[in-house]
Image 1 (cartoon, helix red, strand yellow):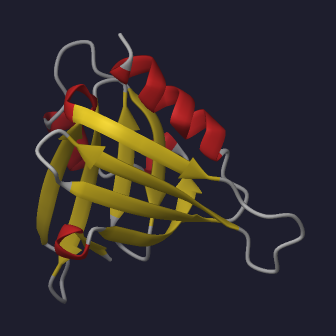
Image 2 (image 1 turned 90 degrees about the horizontal axis):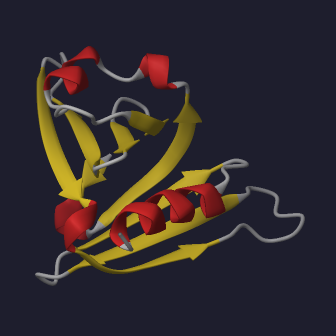
Length: 127
């Protein structure tokens, strides 16, 4: 579940970018490309070359969705935590703090290349 009131998104599993919800394409600006995507049971987190877009599917039917863009341009600080050696349930984490004090924490399940995500963010934050 995506709930930034609690600053966290848990159990994200990597998906192919072709599985990103169709509605996301209407939010993309000229030159914006999807670089990576992750999913919980119904929710998604999409990394583009401009921002992170979280999609929170709400209600029983899932017709109502909340889209939250998190621009790289306002990131003040971020931290990645890699998975440990021989973990039974491997996970890695991404923590982001924005200039206005807002924080977001993402927990990824499985063998996610968290360093690649850190590189994506660094590429666009350090321009």
